[in-house]
Image 1 (cartoon, rainbow, N blue to C red):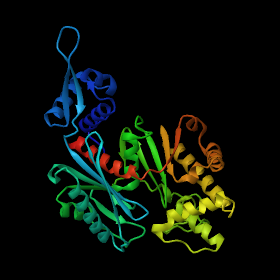
Image 2 (tube, rainbow, N blue to C red):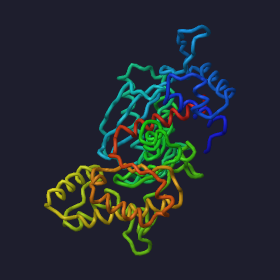
Image 3 (tube, helix red, strand yellow):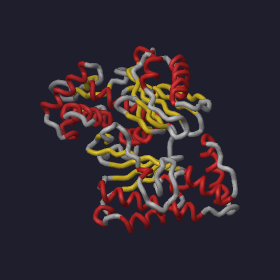
Image 4 (cartoon, one colour):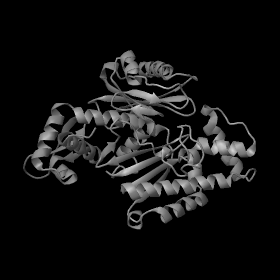
Amino acid sequence: MRLTDQEFNRVLVLKKLRASEPVARTDLVGLTGLTGGTITAITADLVRRGIVIEEKVATSGPGRPRVNLRINPQGRYVVGTTPTNEGELLTEIVNLRGESLGFAKAALTRDTTIEGLARQFITALEQALAEWDVPREEIYRIGIGIPGIVNNRTGIVEHIISLDSGPVDFGGIVGEALGVATLIDNSTNLLARAEHWYGAAAHADDFTLINIDLGIGAALYRGGQLVTGVHGMAAEFGHTKVVPDTGRACYCGGIGCLQAYCSVQSIMEQSCAQLGRPLPDFDRMNAAFDGLMAEQAAGRIDIGPILEQASHYLGVSVANHITMQDPEAVVILGPKFTMIEELRSIFFDALERNTFPALRRRTRLHFKLGDKGAYARGAAAMVLEQIYRCS
């Protein structure tokens, strides 16, 4: 759902204010490109609602003191939470400036249903909220990230690969139990929000984030807004086809998906089959993958062709995306193997040979190691965006 012009202007003002505070109203005109009248109207409304505060600064000369604006850190509090692939739930509470006020970690037990996972979220959140000094009634929203197919408009989880299928009203179950309105989205969308507000793409309005983990996901920002489909779901970049008809089978039921070649899970499946080893359990797969990469680095095994194939197909897929979408930047988050220079050379070779030349020269690329804390920051940013839209 796209923002109205009024909502977009309010979000724009608050993003620029957060990035540059303290800042005067006259400075916001230059930072946003909006008229002085629009800035005055928006900031007056935000001050009235307690989202923004004014600070008078004495001047050395005659005349009225300068009035600077800041986001009010006590205006609202939000909680962001998300599970990890290692069976933990990370939860963080932040103020409107995105400053962390508390962090909690809880173990998740293995479950078979999405509803059972929601009940574990409730228990972990109850414990975290009880330990923090912020009263529950002062928490505006809880933001949850789920590694699955999510309708971010309804809070319904349709599918999580390791659990029985939905749909399940995940957001409704958690929100009703805790008495705090709850928003929910796909985890990759949350990573994109974290990048947009705090990371490498903080000054970019048009970028694509690609996350390489057990699965592969992507999220798109266009015109300063997160883009989702008409059904409120994230882009399924991992299920675009790189070897159609004759490729490896994917868990989605398709053939030749990018996911089936480049994800940590698929690399583990191919490597274990080659080495004659059993495939580790889902919640132990990332740790096992780290061990496998250590063996590869030490020369005790050779899975080089599998890694090279993954790098090549990732480069082809990113090339197709750049050619079709023309993003300002592409941010690739991944495990340590994505930082290996030899594999990155294969990726860039495929990228160069398959991207429309005029677009390749104009697209910035960033490789970053995955950051577990970014999920919670992104969940908090999702709630902050909602505050800014509805304030």
